[in-house]
Length: 82
Image 1 (cartoon, rainbow, N blue to C red):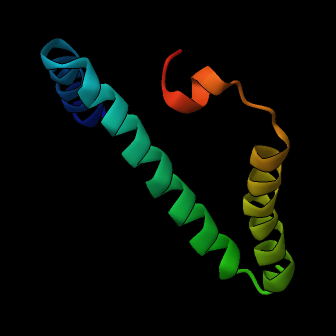
Image 2 (image 1 turned 180 degrees about the vertical axis):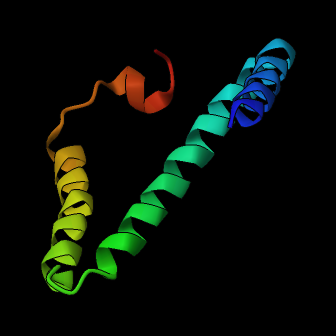
């Protein structure tokens, strides 16, 4: 286990020295892998209500669309001149 931690820290240190964008990509990939694993584990639980979960997740997309339609934007933001 100690060898695992040492190898992982050496890899992360190398990524940070080379390019900062690699850290961002690594974080994004890790988050989605963890999210996928969590959803997979939740779906395998017998008492977990799958329909309610999917409705709840779908509401995030609906809320994002409603928020974007109700949020006023300035003309300069629409044209790309911040």
